[in-house]
Image (tube, rainbow, N blue to C red; front, top):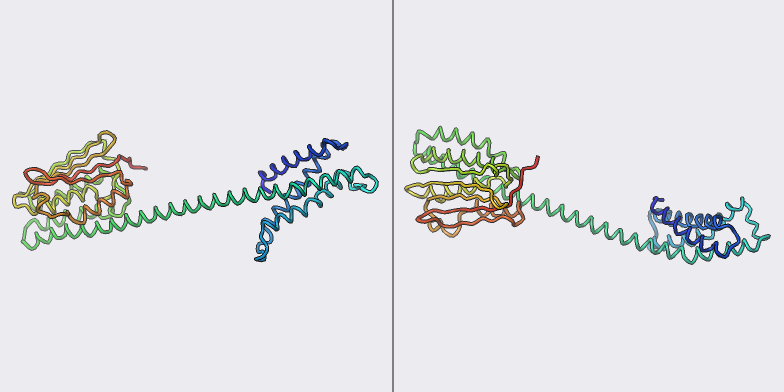
Length: 343
């Protein structure tokens, strides 16, 4: 009994009432009222069997029951319409013209009401199919989103032990060597990890937060090898609030330390440059370590998982490139679209 269905029924019934009133001596308003009553009763039968009974025998289709209900409702509705419009006494026996009018109304109702009901059923099926397809699409999108989030969490879980084990191994080297700086480095490392570990599980962070971690990490590494590591950070202030996956910059810098500076007897320098230009964020981490050839074909788990995390975060609109630096060293360049942190 929704208003949209009632409005449609009244409009169609009024149209048929006007057509039936043309050859009739009865006032048009009365004929239209009778047609509307027949239409409303047929609509009520259609809606009733649409919901009741809840369970039907396997051999009986609900649409067939609705059509039968509409056909049965037409003569009953026509009798009700004449009973209402004649004050409760149709007087069919004394008024042959009224019988003809009743038969005209009955014929028009039986002829057209089932077809209108069939059209409504087809329209309902189409709407149901569209809604179901939309629901399936929404469910599929939600499942894809959950799968991407789960994959991103898995990749971050892989990065977390990779980073922690590497940094703890560096502290162990100082302890084994009996370095007096071991306690100082460990204290700085604990303070750093307290700030870094909670962010490993976040879906996104900002370049400003990443740079704080990078600076703390490089300071810890510089304490471990003060004569072999120098670094510089040059950052565009406009890029500080841009989003990126957690541990993005730290992975590049840690890779430079682990595979570039650490294996080199002379040590080296790490330069981190972050710029925002041409509607893109450009990150470059350059080291003067041993270079690509000394580390083999791959640079470890960190960069491979970082590529996947960037793909999941930016949908393929991010690029990570590694190139050699003369006379020795590696340049890691990252390019991705700027996304501001949301409140």
